[in-house]
Image (cartoon, rainbow, N blue to C red):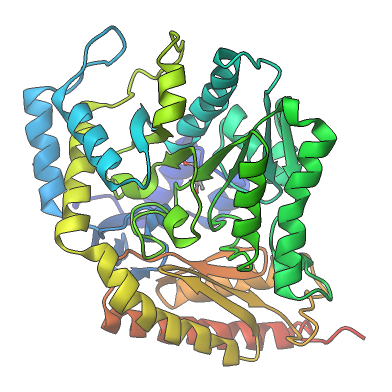
Length: 465
Ligand SMILES: *Cc1c(COP(=O)(O)O)cnc(C)c1O
């Protein structure tokens, strides 16, 4: 009994994949022509593909494998839990030990009075829960007209109808009838792309004040909540100017609206604290969690809710839940993941040792002729590619042209680095060592130089006139 190691040749796997497997966020026909890369094994920060290449995973899967791959403890806990109680639900006045233990542990780790957990199977599901929960909250408080949720352009909150509508990805909104009614988007604090001649500080303040303007425009009595990632992830690891979050917190305090921090990426050590809310110093009423909660070993997410909101919700029957809310195997695995993060002091390590080490090397990438700004918080980082640093100019090509080339050069150098438009981003496993960070940076530099050559060949390294 083991993983499938004696597999078919890569070309046959790719042909079957193309014939039957529909990929998320992918143009299927393009991928079918090219053939997907087949990942077969992983250990620590290293992936192995079906051709035997060893690839440094600079993205921790999809921002989730915080403790790294190949931790047997999680496999053993999963097997034990499956034998003891593989499934039971938590709908009809029943509960089980793994869900109880995990909720208690999350309440202990979460800041302030965020002591209550509503479980989901993913971050998307948890944000759908949040939409219904904040509206139910205001209904129970006798203010049923408070329904609008304010979010931001270029935010990512998931891919279901609700969470995709909360998100501010215009490419997603263009397909399938999103956003749903009752969601309002304001600008993002992306100084590099949108700050113009303003200082980052002034721009951060201005973008935060768009929240206040939106509340006034919509009517304070209509707005239920504001949702945001402490640091935008899928939008390109956008680190807001220091002025942004204090102003957002001030506005949330002044008007009667709930603050939802989407911690799906930032949570569980990614920013050097247990939660991104601690790093940016905010006091959310609800936190969305998923990804690093289980290090991706099992699908699980949830909403971590303040005592005040939870006590109001407890006054009614909340007609909402998922078959797999608090799934016992997923909960047991998440609990073991949190034990490892805590006992091995992995979050402290990110804050005090490997995070600062990566920061020094990452920020030095700004010396490269292709790189404008280099941003990093904990173990999430981005660089902006540009033909002209001084003017922060975009390339004279479709957005993402340079980023795509760079991602391909990274792949060719056995490094997974993702591109969002012409920003390159990383989010490695939190257990990455200093030696592995050196390798990551070395490969990134090689890929950047190869990308620069390619862009020069294409005549794209031109400064705007
Ligand atoms: C990934 C992500 C989600 C969605 O989580 P899924 O588990 O993919 O549904 C929500 N919010 C943020 C910030 C994310 O990065």
